[in-house]
Image (cartoon, rainbow, N blue to C red; front, side, top):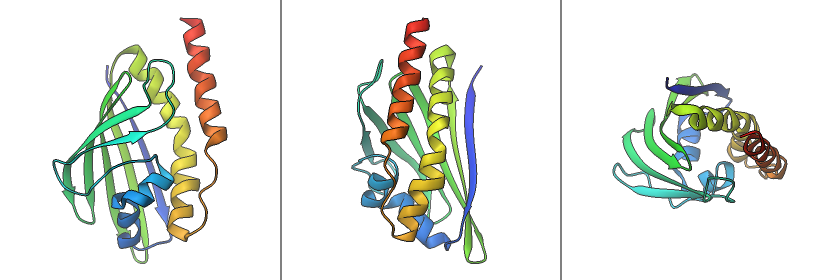
Amino acid sequence: MSRSITKTIEYPHPIEAVWSALIDREALSQWLMPTDFAPEVGHRFEFRTDPGPGFDGIVRCEVLEMVEPRWMRWSWKGGPVDTIVTFELAPLGGRTRLTFRQEGFEGLSGHAVSWILRSGFTHMYERALPAVLDGRPVPSRMGLIASIRHRLLTREERA
């Protein structure tokens, strides 16, 4: 059975500002992970982070669809994960609703990774992205990374 993750959040910023934070390489590198992203359908790009058990630290992606400034879809492959990521924006006056969806987590390892990734969404979408949108320094991810590593190591020890 396939599992998906969905996160919906509203930001007190216009849709153009939120869209820019999703497609700008420097902004993405600040709130998500360092990347060589370009906002072009067919562009292959990578996110890089520290490796972990069963993961070389590289997420390989491709821009599959893009309707500016409303919709973007990527492939997302890293470790045991081969999924599709979708960002959907809706204007709400001067505010914006962002719905993030990651679909296609398969098998036991995919389901485990989905739970681990989901735990990082609070940092990404409620702390890091708002900081980028507000022009503030992005809060450290070190607590998040340590937590994810601990969960991965604990899971491996149980296996």
